[in-house]
Image (tube, rainbow, N blue to C red; front, side):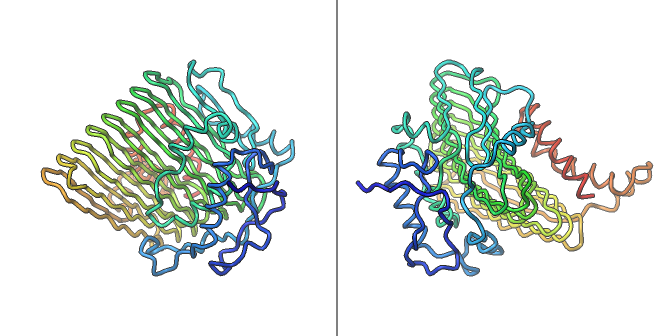
Amino acid sequence: MPTLAPVPQTSSMPSEAAPAAAPSAGLEIIVPARGKSSAPAWFLEKAAAAWSNFQSLPVPGLKDEAWRYSNAKKIALSTYQPAAAANEHLEAEAVAASSGLAETAARFVFVNDRLVVAETDRLPAGVICLPFEEALQSQAALLQQHFMQREMTLGSAKFAALHLAHVRAGLVILVPKGIAIEQPIEVFHWIAAEHAAIFPHTLIVTEDNADVTVVDHYRTLKAETGLSLAVADLVAGKGSRIRYIACQELGDKAQAMHLSSTVTARDAQVKNFQVQLGAEFSRSESVSDLLGEGSHSDMLSVALPTGDQIVDQRTLQNHKAPHATSDLLYKNALYGKSRSIFSGLITVDKEAHFTDAYQTCRNLLNSDEAEATSLPGLEINADQVKCSHGATSGPISDEELFYLKARGITDGESRKLIVEGFLADALAKLGNGPIADMVVSRIHEKLILAV
């Protein structure tokens, strides 16, 4: 089994302009343990294969259907370096700025992919909640079974390979059978240097009838640029519940590629909520595989692009078992010259009878120059199913504005109230009061700047 030599922290990130089969020119895998090849052999082999795969895969082009109406070269890999360690002052500043929920079961802060804070004393006994580097040493079987097992079919294969080759930060969570974690687990991922790239990973596995909520925050500190290439694997056992919230608030000149996959066993329930408030270009890919009879998946998103921001959203609701349900609701409120792209597909396998699936994308245009493109789709191969999809785009109605302004409310405040009302039903589906309140407060801050 091949091994890798220790990697210097000055290792470069590959250029997307390089020929597909070009040699690595001295570029090496960024292994865990901050440059020390102390990771297990199986992981080093997997990371080396991913790096080779990344080099061989071309950057998706304009004719690639999975990138229709978008542009993979918006993620300018040649301008980034894997994040180096921040100094103590920046780390302390990031910890002080890591404000979110008032009550948590556990709290972690990563700065430039380095763990700075780990608070786990409020977790129930038996729960495994470890930083990725530590889990590599003690939870090999869990990682080998569930870590990045799904093929990336929505267009991100090259970027997923880059993530696997560089990943060293994030959490691995296993909630044993019958345990419900009452308060959320909250994680902050900070980019604290210009042109720095981070590669956080979140793996959540719940055994039968377990329950957990995890919130990931992605932010920048004293940096406008940055790349967050994050992956989340959500694996829900029989009768279990997972609520996962990813809140992306990177700098206005940053890029984000966030990939998530969900697997649901019999009678399991998963909510995957994506919040897109930052980044010059952000792309989210969310796949939900409903493998168990009676399972349910909620795929939710709110996005608030302003200026020249682009939000690219790709989804797949993949029904493989009978009597399973899924519900997708994506809400985008656009300002300035911003753009949103939504492409979603519901597939129903021939054995997945009595499927109940919905897909809705709604876009609210607050500018004549904003642009929204929606591409919903269905592929049904079973009988006795109930599936629907729909997409709408339109401006704020003159009647709504007149109603509020006639009561002395300013134009800007009127628009803000209408946008908050527009996003409210997606937030209501989240179902957790403190988390919904936290998301609303982050949206409110963005709206103050937008109007």
